[in-house]
Length: 610
Image 1 (tube, rainbow, N blue to C red):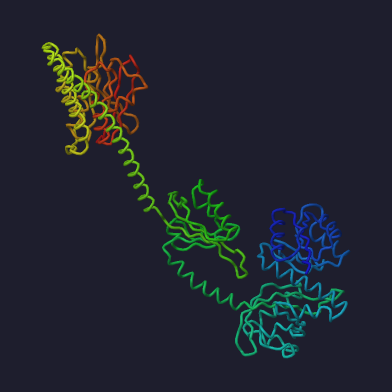
Image 2 (image 1 turned 90 degrees about the vertical axis):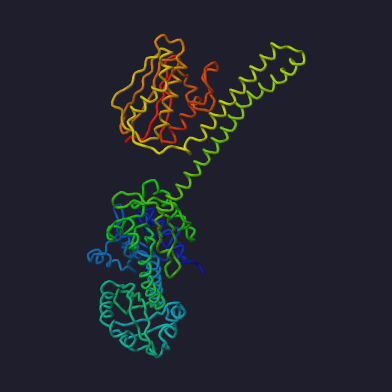
């Protein structure tokens, strides 16, 4: 069967396309769209549609009512009005064009389907009434809906065989009876009002009643009605399309019961319409975000989450609408009433209507603050473990490399010692033994420093609150001989803050830094060391500053590596700054170098200040 051709007249292109897609889903040919009244008249003449779906308010000189007047004057084509304006004046003006129905925006696909079906049926019946009763009788009798014709006294004058399945009557049993015999008494007043509406406006949509079957049982029905008129526009009778909605009403009752379950859920639930506006939230979501329920209704979900997550949510909702299956859990950051950010796990799914069409989007939201913190802590520990492994790997390589050097020396001179003994070279033997002894001494120092570094942080002394100035004085007492013999001038700041530290370890830090400054003073005629601190914002930075040879910027990080020495001719093993760095980090502090080659060196570090 060739699909009915419908011309869509709508000046909003996006809305027109949505309506066009609805009509195509319903099986109609809606391939042509008109964007103005003048365009509607021209395309009606061109394609001769079976029905014109006309927006009342159109841009341009001619509105929908004017276009409908022209179409009805020249073509026998039914017009159904689309309007967001349902006031009496507009309807009365539109009524003069003898439309076949009205659809009030916004509307559902079911409303569109019902209105067009009635309009096409009315038009076809009017045409058939002018031609032959027999030609339309087969359509009337084979229609899937129960169709009942009622005169203005409420007497049933015709019905199709579908009445047997819906109400249990044969057609000849019901024709001639009053509608009061099949409508439940509680709904008779509503039926009378509906009849007046039909006579006045020409239509009545989606009115729900309870009807009485032949066996006395009740069923829920939805009735869409339209007035049938003769060629002069005189009211003849009412055509009613009746749908059995008993199953739907039962489902609604089940949904009502389920709503109490949803309210008791510990997860937050929000339901939005297809325009993305929230229509329902449960108590858990209200408690989670801190809003009043009434303040959340009508919002879009994006308003309840941080701005960075909004595009992601929109894309996920669109995907669920297109593909139907529920989405996997996705993480978003909710935004509470007071601005607090709440990590959420959100699942989206589609709720279909009774015709299987998408009706609403359901979002189930779970507060994952606790699990998120646990995940972050796990990630932190893993990163820390990886860093420790890298540090251990570097440590192992450094130790093996630096310990190998004295071993090679010992091995080499041991061989030379044997040769010299065989040749009775007494003087060389003494020299060989000196080299071996020095190498063994160096290895011993390396091993002691390595052991010392490995113990920092594990065998710590209990931390205590101590003025930092006291720690400086202890360090200076331990290095007094070196400072005097080297001629270094030491200056110390006053009013140091109190720190919470392992006293012995921090004194060790200061001793190391003072000795380093002495060892790397170079040829400075007036070597100086300054021990002080500076405050920037909430941070206190302690420092040991000298005017020695300085350190090139490329070596600022390397100097903290184990056994690394700025000058190979300098004293020590190169473990001092590695030990210092380890002690500072164990205290939760940071340490860094501020220096340029030839311009002195400042070692800065932070400690927990009381």
